Image (cartoon, rainbow, N blue to C red; front, top):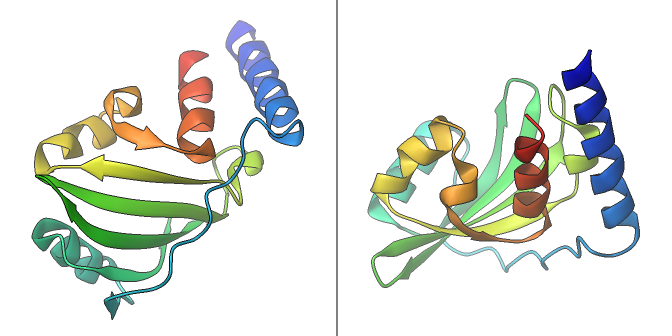
Length: 133
């Protein structure tokens, strides 16, 4: 019961911050590179850090992803939530830019997102939700 209350409070906080303009979205970059229609394409583009873009759906959540190329040793990835199911609905429309390496992948899968080099309202909201768990 306490966990549910904390999650509700976090959602209210994030919604308030979003409505007040604290979570200003990042303009979507111009589409460059190959268009990906499946996850295999995105994985290959990420590991080669080749420019690519497209939409992907995972567990009812739909996102626009754009791999923008390299900055030093890191791959620049833009992500925008288009549809949110199974995650807080207020994430819909939020976006982030992350600078990641192959070594960062376990941080994503182990829910250690607060350790990634990301900016943007989607990243801020995910960190806020994670801090209440």
